[in-house]
Length: 160
Image (tube, rainbow, N blue to C red):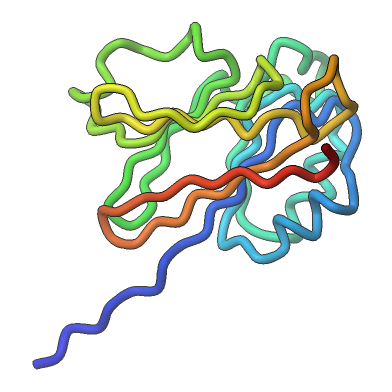
């Protein structure tokens, strides 16, 4: 019997849109199988623009207030193939028991600083901010490519 290999899953990462959905971000996310928004959405229209592209996982950021945001969770966990992903807006709110929970990837936002770093076997990814430019930081998004138990993260600058 020949075992079929599954296709890699592409998970688009976006955060800190702060009411702004850039066409370049939508184009980048258009090739994704799913999208994670790591908070600071600031307006329901942002989610309305993302939802038609791919299944959406969203967490609440410190600027997400009002009735439209009341049902958005503070954190989320999702399993893609054999990889468990934990999503929270602020890295300060990441629990210490990641290994006990089987988490392999943590996706955060908040700092607006794009980052990929592995710590103690856990991959931490912040796609940066896809919204209005802040300070001299790039405007960026990210991607997780998951193939079975293997995961790779990349960042993509929308505007330098």
